[in-house]
Image (cartoon, rainbow over all chains, first blue to last red):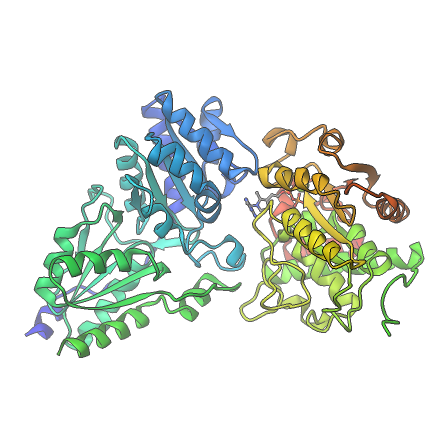
Length: 326
Length: 280
Ligand SMILES: Cc1ncc(C[n+]2csc(CCOP(=O)(O)OP(=O)(O)O)c2C)c(N)n1
Ligand SMILES: [Mg+2]
């Protein structure tokens, strides 16, 4: 009786918290106070990535590289090689696309403890348009051997995962966003690299999401609940290494999975989950993401609506999956 | 044919009148958009006006004319200055009446120059550091076809911190691309503050010269100087020319001038009123 299970589920309401980039900037200052080895490298975007807080408090541990992201990433890798814990930050699209080869040679292949933080990820930056939007970097970062890839959903997740990244010995990419993010977690929630979080229980279908789309997936679960469908929602904040246990369990227990991400469907969370599903408990799947195109200028909400990244789209994908499951 | 195009031989008075209208457009459109980059748009006004109204061989009625000169706004965040000048110059795909839809959903006036929306734009830019490579490629290809076209790439002074700029600068001199002109908008401010506090780039002229470029240093708000520099570039054979244009970020609006805050912040309605008074 899925309908009954679901009516017991509290309705998710959007309450905006801090942007994940803001939470990153604040957490970085805490880390800086706790550990003198934490250093920051910037490429003329500290007021946007919010590393400006760190720069103010620790000017001698903040290295400006100018508008030169490849150099920024390489310098970060070098700092790691002498024992520092460097956080290099820019817009995702510049940090990863321009610093990709440096991430590969300096941090992945070259083995260093580099933390790359990309802000203004996805298309929810809005008005600036595609040249500043990042819809490829999860795929790129996941293709680097040994990299940990994180995509926090809200301020609390960002705080927890930035701390986990600092404590972890090895290269990490963290995806943050520009707009205020809906609050998904309480301040006491624990976050562990590689361990997904079930944010809503359900048995008919599993909605797996990360970043801003976790909140949309929760809204979608409520839409589906009203139709008598019990949807499990999983926050897959770690895209790599993937929580294969949670995925195979979801596949086995629900038999239908929708993956939703603010990223190209090619090479993002969706295909990685699909791989894990195919290898464990094959089931029907649908994918919500950006399909082989670039977005445009507009408000963040207009972007998410037009490019099919809101609760309605996730619910529609779920109905499609459920129809195929039957 | 092509009567409408080049060397409309505008007087400096006429150019100044156009520049003033363009400045008004810039502050109006960015205010309406509630986001955007006024400072670097205002610093580039005279140069872009001079290129489109007095120097480039272009025909707005025939924007895909193969032998045209081309302008690449490598510092794509200054899109408003280019949109306003193209509208003023009569490009049909950059309609003047729509300037105030800048950055809004569905507008052709995207946050950064976007060829999907305005085909008359020569390049989609916004990721700094790439325009000079594009300009060089265009210059080499068109030289191969013995076309008379010349190529003008405008760079920010912060932008030239990107390594790719110097890779293309080296290559342009190596290939003796004398149909290529780089123009550095040397306004001394980038996103996070003054260039000298973020990453010093001086000595700028020496850098370009040592990379094998002919250089000209000018006041980038002086139409006569811009005209003379572009003429000098046209007459320079065997090497590309870099025009280092000293400018004032936010030029024309007192409270924006030399003020890092107005790199990427839109004026409020009150600020717009003040700005328009000054630009009357
Ligand atoms: C590769 C890249 N890195 C960062 C940015 C973000 N950004 C936009 S404008 C800007 C500062 C540009 O300064 P400058 O080149 O001096 O331009 P201007 O002063 O003419 O506005 C930065 C860092 C970008 N657009 N592209
Ligand atoms: Mg500048």
